[in-house]
Length: 126
Image (cartoon, rainbow, N blue to C red):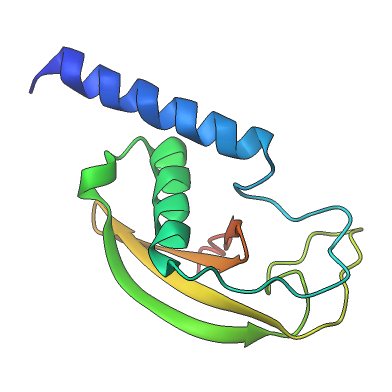
């Protein structure tokens, strides 16, 4: 394995993810949900890439080794995208979005996405 090249890729991923996090585009729910439901971007692949970047940061698995298992368009019942945080109020508006299933090192991970927001669904360990 070429260590300098791998390190450079990781640094670039971290820089992109840091910029996306700073802009509020990666992970987590908005504390002040929008008054209108966001529309899905024309390029659904951008949401899949955001999910892959997040998974890379959380697991350390290289981006190229993360597979997209499925992407399904859905309507979430509110702006939580089906991933509610305690103490946070969400607007009860039908929100178009995606359920993204990724696979890394034999394990599947579920993400919910809408607009420019991507949230990992917690693994309940069942």
